[in-house]
Amino acid sequence: MYTAREIKLGIILPFAWKPILVFFIYALVLCLISYAAGITLGISFVPIGLIGTAVAFYVGFKNNSSYERLWEARRIWGAIVNASRTWGTLTATYIQPLPEDASHDEKEVRTQLIHRHIAYINAVRIQLRAKSVWDDKNTVAHHIVRDQVGNDDAPLLHSLNEFLPADEVQYYLSKKNPATHIMKAQARQLDEIFRKGAINELFYFHMMNIVQEFYNQQGAAERIKNFPFPRQYAYFSKVFVWLFISILPFGLINEFAKLGPDLMWLAIPSYMIIAWVFYTMEVVGDTSENPFENAINDIPMTAICRTIEIDLREMLDEANIPAPVTAVNNILM
Image (cartoon, rainbow, N blue to C red; front, top):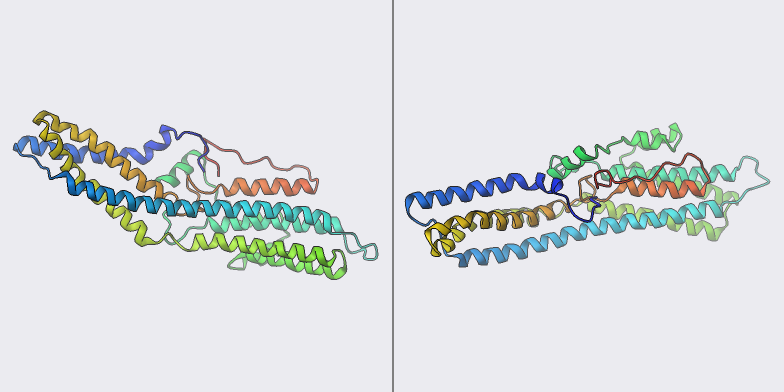
């Protein structure tokens, strides 16, 4: 996620310089042909204006829909943060000692439930960042992150080993959806301590409802991850933008030629500006379609997971708690 108030030129240029160069060469060639041949390679601006209006509405619809996917993804992770804090508070409060059961160590149980939850949220994060069939990780938006921040592709094994015993880790890694089975283990352990009497029935149901909430939010995130932005909207939006950009200079040359032969050259800078605006609107929608792909505009799941980890480990009064993740070159992972 880009965090600065204003987008710096160093971020804009990687997206902009190639298309702007193409726009300049394309308009220059058409103007040179018109000047050399003594004819105006132009058409009426009326149909071009109508196409431009339609394209603007279409691209606007696509961008609104892309933003809805991005904002829903952020709401999902906000809900995970809130539910995680509730989980940590209830775990640290509700689980009581059992004097008659020497094998029951309530502090160890609390630590297990909270550490397993930290492993769970990191498993969700890593699973969501796995490459999709339709996702292209070689885009400018991905290259900027890799060049200015670095990779955030730590394997799931590393994240799980930090908080879980080795036998649990191997079991989860054998599953297609490790996060689902980690939360299943949470429910199983809750059931065990409930049957022992370390937690009363009301609190047990309360915590099981939170387990359900985690499943709900994980499923909502997986829905966005596994269902791409409808290609009929994404693909034809790009086609329509480039169609408009292709015919636009003919209308501009025609209009400026009416003002005088020497003013025809003003079509070049005018075309470059208008074409870049439409191209950028299309790129903005593209970079917001898939909010979990570790690109520059995506959800900062690493920072969110670290925030949850800090909050929960502080509830256990642990030492050596890691520092929050901060933005690097105004990009927060």
